[in-house]
Image 1 (cartoon, chains in turn red, brown):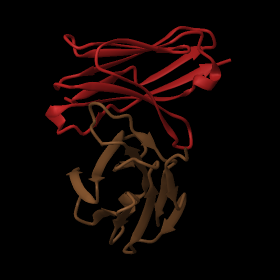
Image 2 (cartoon, rainbow over the protein chains, first blue to last red):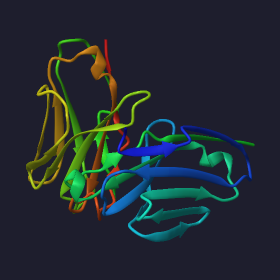
Image 3 (cartoon, rainbow over the protein chains, first blue to last red):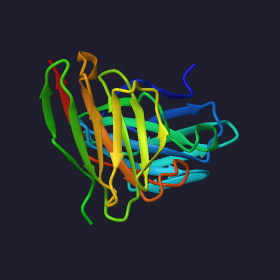
Length: 110
Length: 115
């Protein structure tokens, strides 16, 4: 079993829909990261969180440390949100190196 | 502030050759991590350098090596290239490299094709 599991692997939705991507992990962590990778390879860090909730524009990330689960939400989705969204966790159990999820490929159709 | 830069962006080599990739971190960042990404696989951690020392290493054979210079610039070397080494190689820099508190900033990557 992978230490970081993301679901779904692939997600196709219509423009305007509310999107939820999930991340579950099995190791002890200090922080969880959400990143976005656009076609062509560029990776952008979206959020780093260790508790509660963070919001940036139309993106919202939540984490439940007790349940070892995080969600990334996109409100009013737009075709430009189409990308791979990656969850990664880090902490003492991984010698502070990030353990990466396999990513969720999101396609937003106009 | 300039972002993380990687050179070259694209590289084509043949089996058995060796290759050196370069990464310049954001000014002031002391940690540089290298990742390999192949189609269908997530990012695979290669190694991390901090203040010219390799601090962490992933599960890759000894053909993969790296170093970091005093200005924090880092190079990655792959010797005796194999077809399976074809991948996107990404480097990321952060202030201190702590996976629990630091945001990593990624470069655009070097796409290596081994023929």
